[in-house]
Structures are given as C-alpha cells and as structure tokens.
Length: 84
Image (cartoon, rainbow, N blue to C red):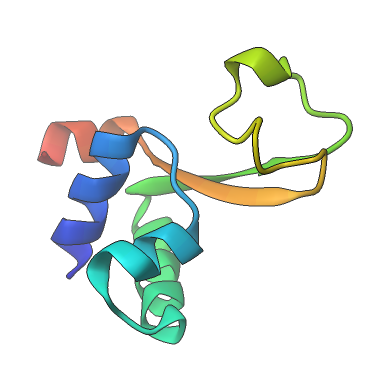
C-alpha cells in the first residue's frame, strides 16, 4: 500500500490524506499510519497552508477549497523520485 500511496502522491503532485483515503478506499486511520511511515522514511514531506501561505491562490491547487484555512498536504521527496 505504501507504494500505491507514493504513486498517487507523485501523480497528483499535492494530495491530502482525505483524498488518499477516498482514492484507495481505505480507512483514514490506515492512511494516517502509512503517511507516518512514509514521513519517517523520508519518502514524503508535509506542507501546511495558512493565512501566512506564500502561495498565491491562483496558483494553489487548493484555491477552491482552502478559504485560507490550514490544509495539510503531502508531496514526494527527491528520495521518492529515485525510488519511483
């Protein structure tokens, strides 16, 4: 499942844990554990958006959903790119 998670994150560029859960049809608790493992191994990094976000909304993949609320997203690292 970790490989599938990496492939989805790589394909999407940025993705939330809720979106991963839906795409993999897997409980959020299982996704959370997978994310923790991938973070520990250095295959993904976590980003938070907020009011201090440096991204301009027009370029942000969450512009339609964010409303300047904190959104946690995950993206693959260079280590993952080598693996994939």
